Image (cartoon, rainbow, N blue to C red; front, side, top):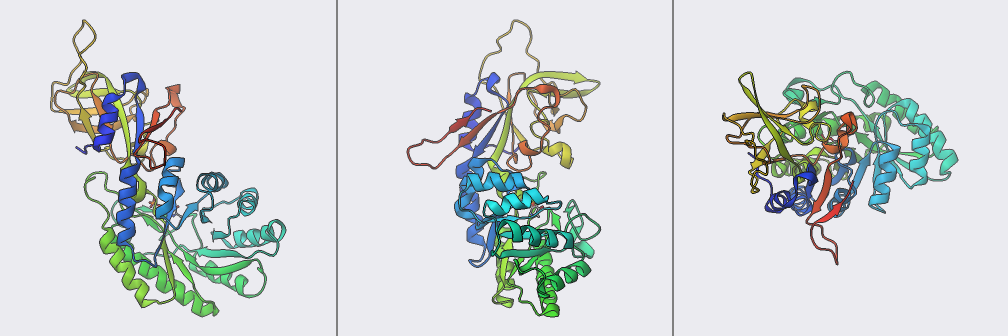
Length: 415
Ligand SMILES: *Cc1c(COP(=O)(O)O)cnc(C)c1O
């Protein structure tokens, strides 16, 4: 069980069945989490937020004071984040950038690019020439280093380290640097290297990867007699859905990054996590519509489902959750559906056996009308879900603990 914060719990119990399902974001908890991460990171290390994890405007604004910038991976994200957090530093990454997206980003003031291929380097130079002539863009070469050994073992989601569509192989990075030094790209300034090789790594594995990326980057710079000013070691800090109480060890990671910074004075280290920043502040709350006994197993059918919270279906886990028994009496003359056994599988309303949020949840006595609150729903949750499948209504959205003058906590948004 992963109990919601008192604010989230109170709000879920105050909502009627028809107001569920709902996403609830505890912005005060998000600020406290980011404050802790910032305190653990050495002062010189920059923290960007990978917007694709959760681009809700209120989340981006709450993160603003704690981050040095935002990593955006499309023209849509670039325009959205620039609008939500005016003046924020944006780094445009991601494979398959179209000419229109790059031009739009340049017009809206993006001056920092993570370049994924030699073709993209040429494209960026030619667009800079026409769209922002006379301006120099900061370029990080995204590299896909081969990673040996244990680093990518376990449930890490590999974005590199072997064959992938992301970034350049080391030999292509040499080609890119040759182009940047021979005067063929006057609008581009080589700033350093970007690598995002895996998601789901613990602090020690992250540090080993960062060290490897830094050493490789400095060797690349030496070969081409170019200073390496920055290394972006990517995101991918682990979030453990099976043990939600265990958090990524930011203190150990920060201490390791401090040692790395000290060893390479003058080098700017940067990281760009997504999931580990926002997963914990989000909750998906729903109501039990029915409880069924099916060939020896028990199923609760909830309002909503994986078309709102796709995370457990895509990652193949059970979403951690808590049951809040309904305080309301059963309003019907017939018996209230209730679980007879100790474990219940929590399913949604979709007509597919894949619509399961959590299996075998210890929920003895679960009854229709009870509330279920799913934790760790603040990243890769609503925004990666297939909302329109079966045309059920969208959830409500509640942002608790807002910190704006003249506003009390708990602003709402109808969707
Ligand atoms: C997705 C992504 C991130 C964030 O990854 P998390 O696992 O959410 O921390 C960072 N950088 C790049 C390039 C990404 O694609």
